[in-house]
Each structure stands twice: as structure tokens, then as C-alpha cells.
Amino acid sequence: MSEPWWQSAVVYQIYPRSFADSNGDGIGDLEGIRRRLDHLSWLGVDAIWVSPFFRSPMADFGYDVSDFCDVDPIFGDLADFDRLLADAHARGIRVLIDWVPNHTSDQHPWFIESRSSRENPKRGWYTWRDPRPGGGVPNNWVAAFTEGPAWTLDERTGQYYLHLFLAEQPDLEWRHPEVVAAMHDTLRFWLDRGVDGFRMDVIHAIGKDPDLPGDPPELAATPHSALNDHPSTHALLRGIRGVLEEYDGDRMMVGEVFLLDTAKVATYYGDGDELHLAFNFPPLFTPWRAERWRDRLAEVVDHVDPRGAWPTWVLSNHDNRRHRTRYRSEARARAAAVLLLTLRGTPFLYAGEELGLEDADVPPERVVDPGGRDGCRAPIPWDAAPGHGWGGAEPWLPWPPDPGGRNTETLRADEGSILHLYRRLLALRRRSPALQRGDLVTLDAPEGVLAYRRQPVDGEGDPVLVAVNFTREPVQLEVGPERVLVASDGVGEGEPYRGTLAPEQAVILG
Ligand code: ISL
Ligand code: CA
Image 1: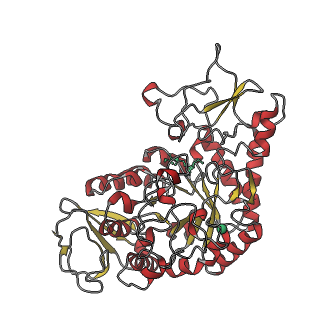
Image 2 (image 1 turned 90 degrees about the vertical axis):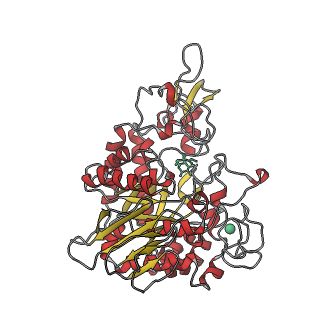
Image 3 (image 1 turned 30 degrees about the horizontal axis):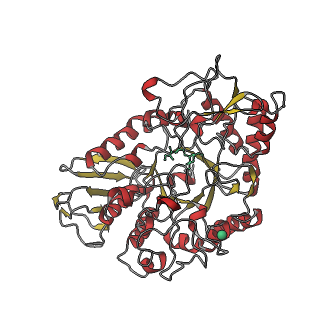
């Protein structure tokens, strides 16, 4: 039996506003993505995940959806989506879209109806509660971004509605069977169009404790979305999985489980009947230290592997500072790329990391995101010319640092660039069964070094050895007669390994 495609795939996240603009309005769009597919083919990614492009008032830049089954005009239309999908598929690139099941926009027709009166048939599609006796919010849950209450009073009907994010993002009530049916239909809409699957936004939050118990006082400042872990979500996920299984062709779902605890994240794989993949975010918040990374690997071995589940790895996304910024040097970003692309599991790249982009420095007057996540969403520079491939208008956010040097065109012309390193890593992965699906065995290594062997599972292909020097010193590491397949700094590639790792160098040997 052949293994599912998403286990050996490398997925590339595209934040559509920031990727490529086709009509010169300064905002990226679907046609812009389509025109840049050659870059992704050249790089060698297997799949793209496109962050939301649905109709939206953009209070949370598309994570507030007012129509799950249409494209927002700022991004194009359904025909643009169909063309993007067809052209991606023609290049062998799968397409995942971003499904936002926890909440809608407050401008979604469902919510407009729901809030119109207590008797409205859609009242129960959202979570409405009376004020507490004597007035006040129903519980102490805190919303993300604002750090204010997760409740807003609707004056007209005198009840509060729940929103784990902005007040413009009311939470759907997944205990209501009509919500389940309506949301399943939104999946079918896109599955019918041919998408390969979904990234599912804050999926761990869709089921809530019906009693809405308050969060413990010591966690009262933490957004409830980072704490919600109610058992009812698991049955909901099995229902969602069932919808995907109505379709042929290995459709998949990767869930954003924003619980910073790998043991909890692992439960969302269920018994092979919930998520195919779950994002595990503790590594994304892990500093550049060998011991800390060793712990992260061990947590996956302890909690994900025993379920027969397949891990994921991610270092950057549209919600957090890029790892190039967090790790503060290109040498580390390069070594981190070797790590990310050689661990056991499915790696997720965030557009621009292959260019070694840093977050933009966004002056206060240009900050537009209520969560302050603008820096990592800076536009991708495509060439060295002043508009960097974005046509005329000033893009919606400032450029990242050094767009004249750090752009796709300039780095493609430089074989020593980080962009070429990513390409060589992807090419090696693609021809190495050990890297794609092999077991991972951690090896003894000097302090500050992480070393592991990737061992082919069924004797298919050769094992490879990976060593990452997290320190600023050269380190001796004896591993027998091996050849350097890839080095993060390019030094010595194709030559025999000499037994020394340069400072902050990572190598793949085989
Ligand atoms: O963004 C965060 C911290 O800066 C996270 O806590 C984030 O709220 C969490 O990862 C959930 O994120 C997802 O849902 C949000 C949306 O704003 C994010 O962009 C999305 O990735 C609400 O839909
Ligand atoms: Ca545009």
C-alpha cells in the first residue's frame, strides 16, 4: 500500500495579501500566486497552503469570513481560483486552503440573522448568554489580540455573544446540528472544486464546554483560545474527517491546534480518525539551543509516535516573528532550514523563509493588524527593481529589510544563496526515502550539537546522518567515512566529511 502524499510532502504557506500582486493595487491576489507558480516548481515544493481568500470585511485580514464559498474581490474571483488550482495541479503541486470553522465574520448573513432577535431560527448558531445576575459578562474568558473579555453585549437583544478572537469574529455554536451541516457543506463546496485538503484554523476550539466554566484565575490573562481543549471537539473532528472521506484522492486536513503542549496536540490525531496532521507549535517557540531542540524531538517521540501519527514541523508562519528574525543570523536560519527539512514529519515552510527574509520594521502609523503581526506579513520582493515585482502602488505593508538584495531574482542568480540551499534540501529530500519517511534515531553528540540518523523503514535507499552545530565554535564530531550531501553554508558539499562542524553549521551526510 502506498503511503499518503502528505507524509512525504513539503508544504509551502502563502499569505495571499503578501505574496504577489497581479493588478498593481498593492495587495497580493490569487492571479498573482498563479503567475509565480514557476518559482514554486523550481524550488521544489509539493503543496501550497493558501491562507484565507474568502469574502471578508478584513477585520482579521480574512480570518473573519462573511462567505465561505466565494472569493473576496480584493483577491479575485472563483474563476481565478479555478485557474490557480488547475495550473498548480498541472505542475504536480497540491493545493490546501484555509478553513475557518471556529467563527465567522459578524457580517456573515448567519450572524446578522442570529443577532436580529432572540427568536430567530439562527439564534442558536452562535453562543448567546444572558448577563450574569446583576450584570456583567457570563465568564472570565479572554479574547485573543484585545486581551479584553471574549464576550460582547448585543444591546438590542440584551445578551452577550462569545468571540474567542475579535468582536468581529463571533464563535459558531458547533453543538447545533445545523451549524455542523452547513459547515460540512462549505468543505464539500471546495472539495467538489478539486482542492486537496484544508488547513483548519484553531480547530481545537470548535467544541466548548456547554457550562462555559471560567478559566482558572492564574490563567485569566491567557486568551481562552489557547486553553480550550474540550472532549466534544474530537467527535466533531471525526465528522469532518468523514466529509473528506466521501471524496477520493487522499484529501487531507492539517489542524491548527494552538495548545502549547505536544501531549495535548497529539490527541487531535484521534485514533487515526481525526486530523491527518496537527501543527505542533512548541518548536516554533523554541530558542536556538541544542538541548531545547532535543527536548522537542523527545516530546514528539513520546506523544505523537505512539499513536502511529505523523508529526509536523514549522518554524515560521503569518502569526509570529520569522525564525530568521528570532534567531538573529542568516547562518542560524540556514542551519535551521537543514533541521526543519530533515526531521521526521511533514515540514511547513512560510513564503519568504527561502529568501532568508527578516520581519519588516513596521512604523506605528503603518501597523494594521489588531494582533500586531504585521512584520512577518511584509510583501515578498520578487526582483531588485524599485517596485520589486509589485507593479506601481505602495504595498499594503512596508518591505522587509534589504529588498534590493534579498529578492527572488537576485538570490536565484547566486548559487551560494539561502534560496539555493532550500532548493538543494528539497531536491535531496525528494530523492531520499530515509529523509521522507525514515525513522529518526538521536545520536550521542558533544554539547551544543544535535545529531541524528534517518534510517529507511523498509531497507529502501540509504540512511543519512544529520548534525547541527548550535554553537559559535567549531566542533569535532566523528561519524565515520561519509560524504557531505548538503552543508548549510555550502562548504564542502560533495566532498568527504572531515570530522569538524564549522560554527553554526549543519550538514547532511550520507
Ligand atoms: O496570533 C497568535 C499570537 O500572535 C496566535 O495566538 C493565534 O491567535 C492563534 O495561532 C490562532 O490563529 C489563527 O486564528 C486567528 C487568526 O488571526 C490567525 O491568523 C490564525 O492563524 C483567528 O482566526
Ligand atoms: Ca492585487
